[in-house]
Length: 285
Image 1: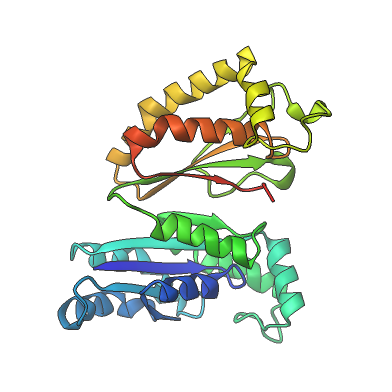
Image 2: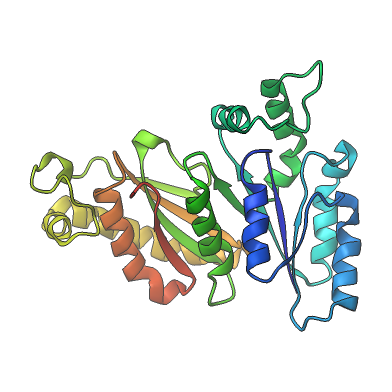
């Protein structure tokens, strides 16, 4: 049996996550009382008609605070039944959440006549801290539209051909902010920048002219060798610690050239030893 627990602050994309999982064969339950989690898992194991049941539940701030505080022990109880259970936590920055609620005119579940929207968003973060602290996978949806979020969820949750830790190498641009869900971050802004070559500016690190330019730079190759050596040594240690997901972020200024090139090159070099390895470019259009 596979169980995915979806949580996160309101407006971060939990409904979209459940929709994606439902479209891919999961039996989905929204707003499950946290205290019922072990019982649900037990019943799914005993009474399901599916050979390999897949269940996804959403647990959010509409729960009683006392139940949310008990989440770590409830999760441990579920996992003690040898159920494959992953916790997905979605979030976005406060400004983005405020904007989303303003645009959709939805009511935040924690707002009332004495609590403003901004206060509710902040309080929700505190209420869900126990779940956030135990998340296997965190996804920052600040810069993702609906379609990008769907693609990201499919890539991270559903595209795992091998058991074990799922690794993601992600390129990004610092000018749009550092990904909050990254476990390891490498800053490559010190490398020669193709952006300042007029004939290369409109290409990306996926295009041959940029690939040829960066491959010819000694500093780029030295950076690749250093990062590759570090990841080759330490990523297996992450896997040995039973981590379900590990994200390695490679950042340059705009997220179009240097970080993309190095993410692709590292992905090619590491895909055989790591097996569950995916490459994503956050800031490529």
